[in-house]
Image (cartoon, rainbow, N blue to C red; front, side, top):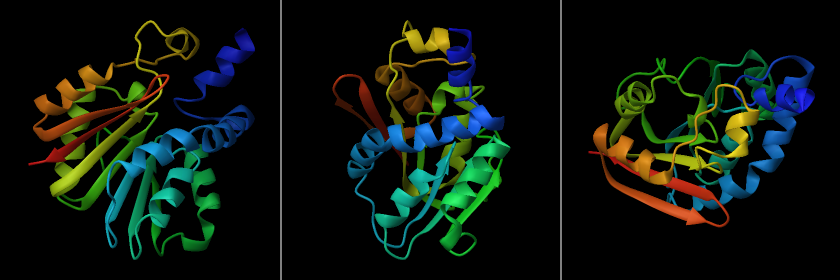
Length: 203
């Protein structure tokens, strides 16, 4: 259990050899959730998009494929994640894909930059979640969308016991937090067994 806990705690901030293994695991295992969730967003060509907690960079690739002529940004607190995401997106790095190290608490982007912000399996680890949501809202264009994709929606989930520093939120709680942060037209979508996508729009 100790080794397993150490491995999965790398979800929050992948580090070292075990962190690199976790990033490969996440790129593969998050594919069904991400592909389903992104279909719900109705992504348009030419969008400027940001993936917060970009991990191993697979979501950046998926965003790019869904929007011709788009520009995609990724940010992650983990140095290991940033390195992996840059490697995965090497062909378009610093042309169409831009990746940096940083936190959701203080996004290094100007106001109103993005048409879409995504957060795939990452809000569990965001400190001061209401403040982070205000940051997301700040960097979105008017009418821009924020999509939260999660697989763990139960506070009593075994994952919250295995992964240190993880907080699970129900889709209803996330919707309330988005509403409180000033998002509108907030929608909850569910896919069995526990996948959920919560989408809000900047007024």
